Amino acid sequence: IGFGFNGAGELLRIFNDVNQIIDSVTYDDNLPWPIEPDGNGATLELLDFNSDNSLAENWKASEGNGTPGKMNSGLVSIDDKEIIDIPNSYQLFQNYPNPFNPSTTIKFAVPKQSKVAIKIFDVLGNEIKTLHEGIKQTGTHLINFNAGNLSSGVYFYKLQYGNSQLIKKLILLK
Image (tube, rainbow, N blue to C red; front, side, top):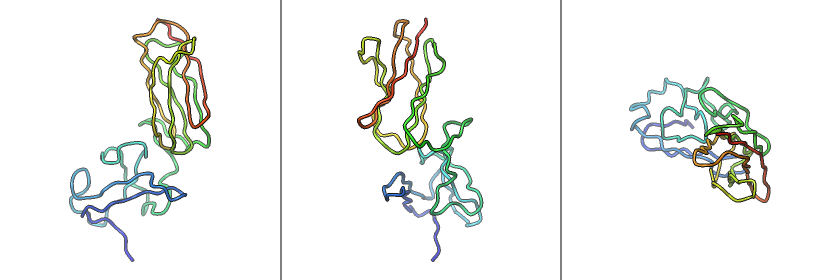
């Protein structure tokens, strides 16, 4: 039995090891996909499964004959410059730069698709801002925090997942 896409609107679903759908894409003969696949080109590999799979720039030619039934490369692309292994635990990294003015980057890792929240608090424990609240896919993520409207001082950022949390300190110097 052969397998392939002919550009007629086939639906591709990607499942994890417990049979949950983690991504899907429809392959048709509209941009950004080839108008007439000839069967001689490379198969496609999604660069970062957290990215929008409907955009051509988020795909690359796969090595060899593709990766049917297997993980693509086992790596997750964070941006054009950095590629890391898939994490095996929740992690919250120190923001950088720190101290900062007025923006900093917060990096965190999620070992499996899950609901997470990233929030900023002042020294009294008051919530200042929610940077993200919702589902994140497996991988390492970067969030930019712009504190241009805040006063200089010590703040905290928290990664919350399930009934657990990780907290780090950041310093805003204006």
